[in-house]
Length: 240
Ligand code: CA
Image 1 (cartoon, rainbow, N blue to C red):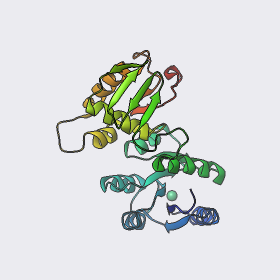
Image 2 (cartoon, rainbow, N blue to C red):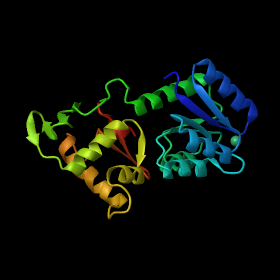
Image 3 (cartoon, rainbow, N blue to C red):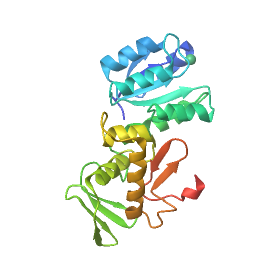
Image 4 (cartoon, rainbow, N blue to C red):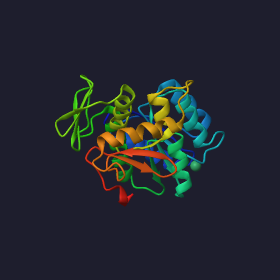
């Protein structure tokens, strides 16, 4: 993860300088901004791999920066840094497309752990994650993205193109909380007749083919009030 370009948008000077120092000593190429306007400017002009984004910022708040970054279809990963740990903030962050969220105060070790996970995810280098099209095993199923085939316990089953694309997107963002709008944008694109409901319908269909017990999904997990989270190995949904 070294040499990735990281943009720190944080108005609290002591924290910003400490982060910049710590990141530089880890070998990152670091950019910094002390307010939201300058931060967004740098994000759009420099397209860093990762943005560390404070929420309470002068000139333009973090949510607005995040929304603008996503509207620009910028591929940068964003980790939100905030002193406000309420669930509401967490959900807002994910709705606007944050990849992760760290509550202040945090240790650099914790932050680096999150950063590593996020960067591996966007680089497709997480252990066990498919790097490119090919065969992927999900529970009892094997999906071949290059041959467009889907097998469950060795028996061929049909998966529509959209179902495959949805599955691909979920796989590529394994472990992340994905809100419906983001899934919809990525799989169906904007300006057509899809709605967040379209996402739900396809998730239901996919679950019927993929899950051993579609009513108790272990791979495509519902995150109430937000959207979905994917687990390739399978989790007990009743825990979350
Ligand atoms: Ca702040």
